Image 1 (tube, helix red, strand yellow):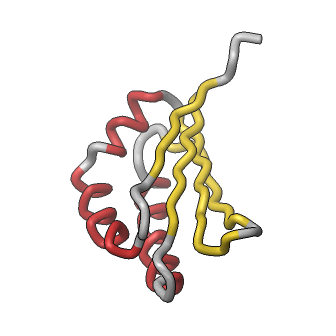
Image 2: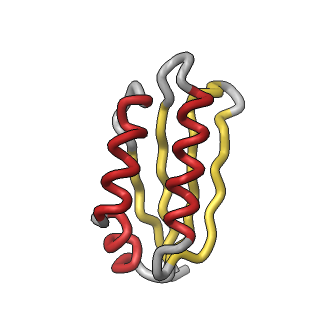
Length: 96
């Protein structure tokens, strides 16, 4: 299993529109092969900073979703609502 950390920063006044569209992204991800679970958190010091932590069966499953036409189309609507580029970190458990 891998974890994917996704950080996004929403432009001022677009929070409500962002929330509606980002829910759809999560709903579609849930249906993607290899998706295990996910949660989205709000930075307590910056309410426009959102962090999503998603668990995927494998990096190949994540890559398939990340490069899918479905995600690309959904992100085309979200990207204009962000004032910074999305930051993605793929994490795996250490061998320790």
